Length: 321
Ligand code: DGY
Image 1 (tube, rainbow, N blue to C red):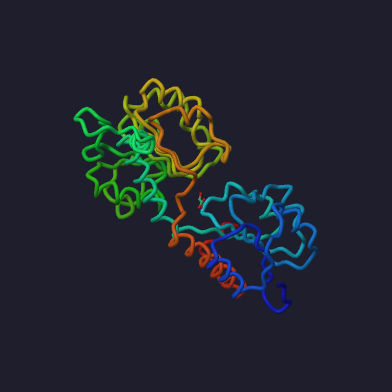
Image 2: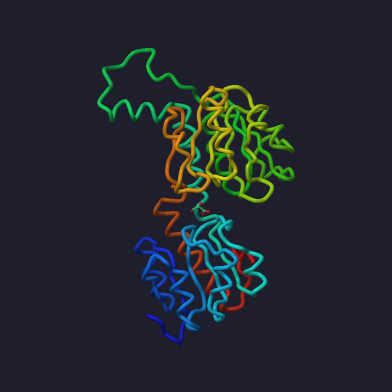
């Protein structure tokens, strides 16, 4: 219900119940009633101060242009902001908040899960059992590769990348990373720097994509890059699907140039390139990196804190623009 004495928040996506309750008990909330939240919002008039939404409600130029003039805050329940036209939001003077930090452990755990699932032939192992086709242990069955002793390359050594590095080191892996610039030693955690993704891919057994999707990174994993990779690479994508050229990865998986892939995200999701389903060496999950109770509660709270701090005129650490 919308009250006039509190921040008026339009809740455009659906969230877990405690998060919705937290929004309701803090703000004057109005929940989207249809599957077209942006059309609803455009019809509301000037009653709303801010919108909370997630990747399922893209805020592109036209959507932002159609927002009621009263809207001064866009709070995205995600760390990624590639579903928002930030330039347009900035030009309209709208503050944008996101959810860094609180989901980083969960996303890093998912990266390890995908690495292990890909290395240990998780898809085949699960299929064998679920199809009731396992006839007993034998020494030649489902032989994968171990991670200990192998080298992990992290493309995008930010907060999430560093948490992946910590966990991978505990598994006995050596760590290299590629960022635009080398990190200070206390942030690099002993990982070796490579200045380009080409230099990185030549030296690693497992490549994890942990960078945002930008003009520079979209399609970065293409046939040319995979051609320079060590034979038997394991590729893990926990970032965004459009970092990968699907055709190139599928070709490399079919020919075993890439040993296996662990995929959480897909170009054009929820559509998934149909050939992935036919590849036994693809271990894939439907974009569940931040799907833990801990992360999802934290994501709600950090947005609530951001809006309250912004109302008080304070600097908000997770303000994107
Ligand atoms: C994000 O936060 O950007 C993830 O992709 C979903 O939590």
